[in-house]
Amino acid sequence: MLRAMLALTLLASPAAAAPFLVGTWFGVGEPGDKSEMFLARMAPDGSFHALFRACVKGKAFDETDSGSWSLAGDMEKIHVAIVNGLPAPRDDFYKILWQNGKKQTYRYMATGFVFTSRRVEDGFEMPGCEAIS
Image (cartoon, rainbow, N blue to C red; front, side, top):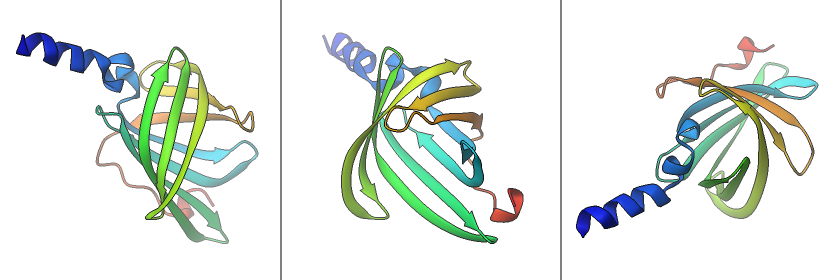
């Protein structure tokens, strides 16, 4: 009985539904603006932590988001609970256009922007602004 309950719990987890999303993902820029970077850590339990960095004249402006993620078909829901340490709940939706476990392309449904990110090692650190200036 305990094994069956554990198996059902694992199957219901976001990682069971979308193991390719679990891990650390890095991307550069918004469409037409390469002065921004993002690093998202997607945990098997459905939680996430993301760092967004905008570079203006070589100076970094960072934002951190955390919350939860889930996947239904090709639609990823990101529930942002905390922004820069303060409650700021919202739901963001992305349509996964393509992925191969090492790279993914997805559309942010609110704006239509298409983003690409690549899988990086879990210890990967966000580069400084000089890397994209």
